[in-house]
Amino acid sequence: MKGNLLFGQILKSAAITVRDNLQIFSCFAAIFALVNYIFARIETNYPTVIWGHLLAAYIFYYSFVRVYFWKKPIFETDNFLRSAGKMLIIVLLAFTAVMFLRISFGILKLFAKSLAVFPDIYNFLFDSYLFLHDWRYTSIFMFLFLFGIMMFTFFIPCFAWISTVIGREQSIVFSVIETKKYYAKIFTLYLVIFGVFPLFLTVVLIGLHLPLIITCFISACFSILQIVIYLKMYEYLFLQKQ
Image (cartoon, rainbow, N blue to C red):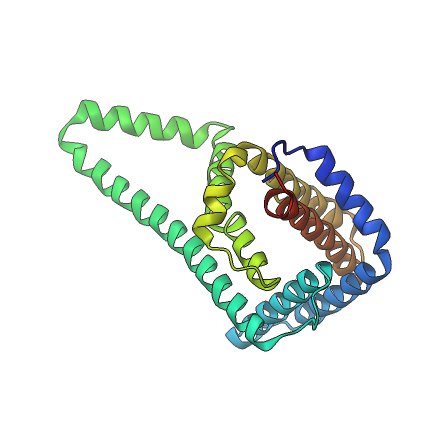
């Protein structure tokens, strides 16, 4: 694993990769934008439509990773199924973590109510809850906390998914352990690329009131940039020699 993980190197390398492969990445962006546009025009919440959109998005990401690492053929049935199985495990891991947090908060709420027989403790906890509820920074801290949970249950485990897609078997546990020296740096980079920038882009696009197809294309281009940065992170962490 690389001894020194620098944001500048990753971002610069990602920019160069996008520049050198602009045509093929533009094709991927156009395809992804068209897929999102089609599903956005389908005004329904039927499970079949939702699952169809998720499947289309998964095929897109799978194909992009294969093309990025120059793997042939682009689509390989056995590899596709194995990688899909690993992605399913990762999604279940993230879902379990979210449900665990929800159940834990529910238990804490019930426990707090049971303390009503102790007025001093109950009033203290209730006042603390009201303070946190009204504090302007509470939502920010909650966002950072949830983003940290997602980093350990989805973002980092997805390194193992990339390994499976390109034919390198790597466990989820191995991905988490091997990146332990870089948790803070990974969190910061992912927070900016997958948290702050998407929020900023969403606000800008909503304010511009662009046609849906243009909005989908801009979002797709940004998604391509996100993927490339993510894959560059994977290269620096797992494919570079020490």
